[in-house]
Length: 462
Image 1 (tube, rainbow, N blue to C red):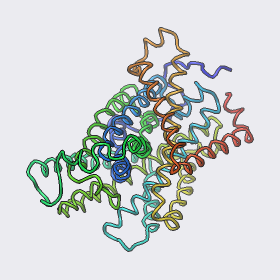
Image 2: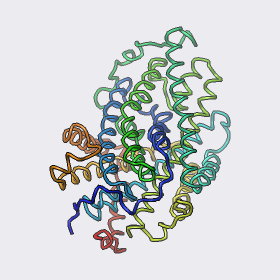
Image 3: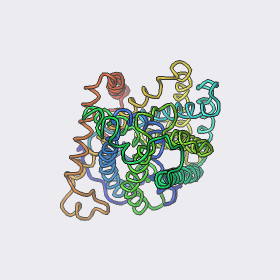
Image 4: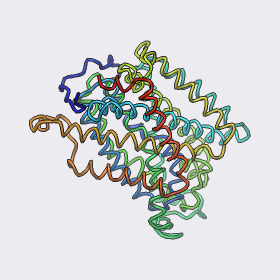
């Protein structure tokens, strides 16, 4: 059969019973990129690129926007279970759908490991002598209980988490502006526009330093594609998904570019070391200790939110694949709309996070962040290619009738695809990312072999 057969624009019968309202989808979209990558991982990106990291966030944000518009175009036209794993299966073939779904699950698990590690690091603020793995184990118990609740409870929890995160980032920006305007804090700390050009200039490590920051910046945006997964559970996907996706440019400018800009204006970039969250470090350095403690609560909330959302996304995609016989059939079983078997299996895999934080407490975050980036940009690439393939199979009339078409077609998509391919090239170029590249490529090979050996390739032709 042809792998580019166009389904009708009517809602697919395989869609799950909806459990999320428009406000849930909007806040999941709003909070999906506000997590560990911003609150903690931004320190590594700043150290790599210096002030030029602001340009990296803008470029990475543009890639994310075009990827999400591609996903949004397909999701509004076909709000079906399995989301992008199913889109890639329909438009690129059985193997593409299979590997995209499993790579997304791999991505979510790796990102969860990063967030679990970040939580353990944040807890040093209050308990510097407690072993990291203890906090990781406790966090798993909390998010496990949350994910085994109903879909509606998940949405409400993310709604509250996102309000906390968004309020904190806005408060940090406003507070930072007040510090700059009124000269609050430690008078001995250099602040202002001079921090963007001092100590090596805007490009202290040259173009190479800026390019090397791409990995951590794209890691920060990882998980935004959950909008497509959550959208299939919305009561009105045609309205909820476009509204959620269209918030992306504002989110990127406000929560990344502006927030990181304030951080760089408040502290010289070399002092943002990553020993703690840059958001906490800013207020701690300026002597506003109570605010530092409050922000540490916020970044803990952000990490918990990210883990909760990542497990939700991975569970739904794998369960959707199971219904298409691209994963073990047991993983399709649900209770109260929750894929219980899949969620429990994913939680079991995350026990690895406890072991890693016991064995490698200082290196684990950097390792898993680079692994997550490989998986993230691979999934983004497949989403973009699936959307391009879907367009090629449409008639002129079908293109004009698209309810949520991608902008700047096809130039925006070509830019995003080229940027992702370039990022894979960075991983080949820089030895620090060779391990992540090797593990990612190894995962592709192993899953491809399983695809053939287990007969999933026959299911993919259905």
